[in-house]
Length: 495
Image (cartoon, rainbow, N blue to C red; front, side):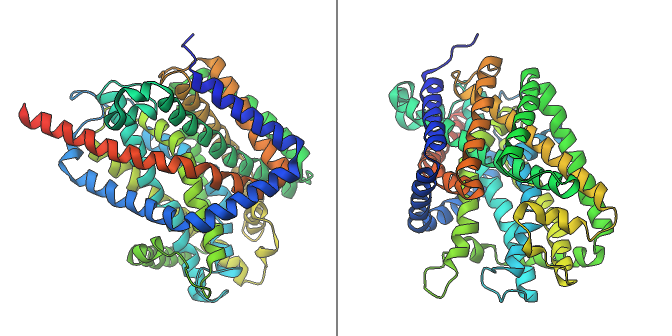
């Protein structure tokens, strides 16, 4: 069995203590996490906005610079996976459940409940709601994932370092990364990963519960969500046991087939012409106003700061907490690609697909709302299913959606157990199954505790808190990456 590092025991202890505290003192846990979340959102919102925008700029610079020719591996290596499979794997790990959970609900909320700046219910708010969904799920997110994954892949496959966050900082700190400082860095990464993935598992359990309630009258509550998480945990542990090239690969391809199927069917049975026109205009508006939207910090009393904290700041924190997990997973499946191929693929393809997704589901939800059916009366997890009720073949659409959520659920958790196993066995490319099982159970336990102590509110609070310390590590990773890439180019010029 691969040697289990101290990172494993330290982080597992921290996770267990958090779970015990949350289960024993749920009210105090919710209060404390809520207070810290409010402080972080208010005091560091500007910081999250600047950081995410800076990562987009840096990713573009790297992709078009001479660095882009460098291969993530030896000069003659070929990619481990075909391009379609590679895209499916990074997409499934990087987004997953959230797309189905928020696909109809987010644009609808920003149109009919609380708009970023337009008048609620207006045509401007309808368009703005879609554009901000593109922002929250688009190029900023994937540039951030891309640059973190690039650092990990470069040092692991080009330089022969272990697949650890701490290993990417050696250009700055040298052998100190082999000691307590390196352990601290990796503990932060693993801790952020556990809570970041637990957020998605919580969303997934809530929405599967909502779908089963809508279709079959299953009670909505913690008991049902506990059973859903228990069943899915068993399924993703079985998949994790089979390894990267089997379980995750097949599940990722299944996700893409189900997602594209649901997308096409809703496009056909929904308001097709309106969807196509709305996508064309709102995607253009997004591209025109991306700088303005990226730096909107709502500093004055008349601004909608509450909306910003609840949406943009929450999403940026959520994606940052996912960065070690998704970054490490994307790095693992991207061996053999050049930096230019890698960054363009990671930033462009998912952004375009996700924008189409939001245009289809967000426009359909807004159209149903305008027809006189008030979808805003339903909780987030039920909006999608009640929207389907207003379309032809609602049962088929709902069943596909539930299957897609479950498949994304399994893939995200499966991918995360693999990455957590890597991070806690000194970067092993084939982490032992025993370690993956322990992390799988830990993730599910955290998701259950967060649902138990405060539902989605506790989940959102925790994610914003967990992301802050790791964001500082991200900045150091970027500096170290530029230093290493510069040395690489200089060495090639000498040769």
